[in-house]
Length: 175
Image (cartoon, rainbow, N blue to C red; front, side):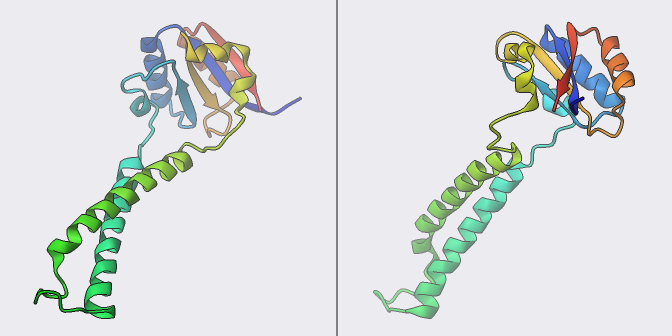
């Protein structure tokens, strides 16, 4: 007997998926995910998902901007000061273009790499790929998967809970 990844409930409308996600979260399930062929407004919040990407991008941009400014200040005021036209060595207006560019560069690189890391990529195979019905997640069906690693997960009780939500079908997902 193989390990079980979770229970997959199939729904025919986004409203049914939203209702199921809200009910599952209210029932205490936390290790679950929703799958839909298009973005469903409010689904991440209903699943209890938090998006940390904007904060990480802000931190990356701030680090890039401060690093660029410090690099220019150190090079022009400490390491190799040159008197150019009587201007001060710490001439902040001349530092702004490169500071801006490195802020944008570091924020963009942080967004790229953090989105990969937060999404768990690269992941060439997922247990849900072995379920034939899951192909419709990119066409016209909506799925809610409650994983076995959830502390509240018990095979029979979770199946009974999902059955109360009137899904089209419930499938056991092998690991």
